[in-house]
Length: 452
Image (cartoon, rainbow, N blue to C red):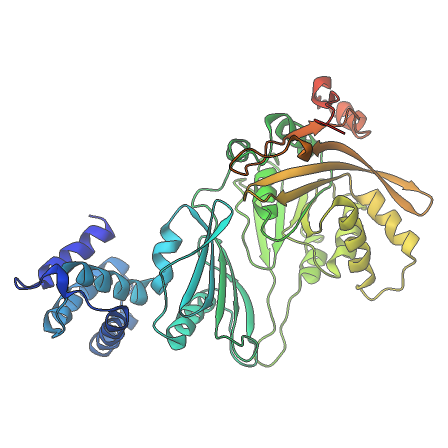
């Protein structure tokens, strides 16, 4: 029997004959009843809740006790009210309160809690206001503490910001007082229950089959690839999909701030950074993990996101025999991603000449894939550029594929554009050919834009 069916059965048991649909109470009244039932459950089942290790047994005990407590409730409640109250109280005890149903909704890709009474979600790239809300700030803080505590992190006035993750890998960010003026804020970027595959991204329109085969060849050929894009453009999702092309026999080390990648290979070692403890010590940074990974005999190093001084160590690894490395970066274009890498290397504390930094970047990177979230909410690969060495003091790049925005949009605002080839064949194709990896010439056939 499903959770919803069990909750309906509990509510039906508690219902009395004289209850009528018109006896429905206000939102404030239901919130008060939920809060009271929550506290009563904890008070009467405190020891049982804290010591039980079997969730199914605990759930049945809660349902039984909840039916008893609802039966004592003097406020007239409709059957719908009883079902809603039962579901919400159980979500508060065993799940993540008002967010539980949103986390279970496969159409929701992001959850944004602005304050206890304001919860937005993203569906198909567009933001919508929901009717979900928390009882008060204490209720929201309790859910945040529950999420953060599960991965061994903390959030309090001394450390009012935190990055964490849910058991399924979904990314979580929370900010509380004194930084959050309007009250605690929570953002959850959900991951699909089943990791997306390249077929899924082709179906979504993020990538086409021609580019998919080209990227697969590049990964098999151990090219160093950087995935660039703005916030929420799908960089981590694409990184996870691209990483699936890595042959199963290779030793892969993933390095992340919060472990999100879900690789299916049999030989994957996952490393996660650690923030400082309450005394301000014990921090392990991405840079520390990149350095340590070089001593672990990696075939591939996959860095979830490069955002600081670890850029120098990653570039040095790429230039010292650790080919086939993959990472993401926040940038608006491939050229901007090169500039950001320069800045990050200069943040490492070494007084390096800018030309030397650019030479490192030009030598280390082979290809940059640019993602963008369009106005219609879709996420698309809009540019694929080859990094082609240095010319004077400038890193030379050439576009291999581009997204034709000039094709316009349809009546509903959906983009009609698609990815097209520039007609230029990347120079690294010779290297792939030497490895026995061949890409058909028609993949690079020139396609002019719809209009100039």
